[in-house]
Length: 175
Image 1 (cartoon, helix red, strand yellow):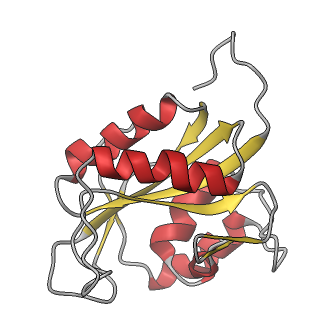
Image 2 (cartoon, rainbow, N blue to C red):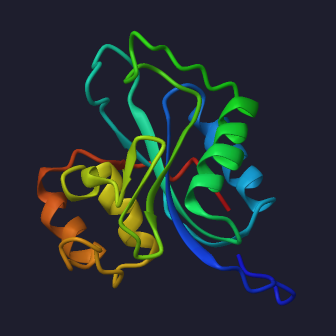
């Protein structure tokens, strides 16, 4: 959380984290590495959900982090997230991009920007349809208004919750 000596940083990055290979190790490790690049303002609970796309793999554990950083979104993605994923043994299989992974970190929201970073759109369009994204993000800032729809994250999560199969993983702590 914010320390009294925190410096003011320029940007708010809402990050989604996912893992289905050793999530009890890799999710907390990712949060610790993110602490070295900015101020972690909030962390969601960890939620388990079935995989999407390639279904013949373990369930995913998902969470979200609100990180204040003095970096542009492109630099956060290229310099920080790529390094953290590599440090945490992330292997990308070009034949199976939805396959198992130790850690996946995506910029779901960045300030109130509408941008494209490395081929990914921000805000992440899946926030509006995937409970495993919307529910943890709503825990970070329920009153945040989606830059495209104007819906609060709380409203998006409430709309998606009835179709959700998320299970809270209280055994995995990120703080």
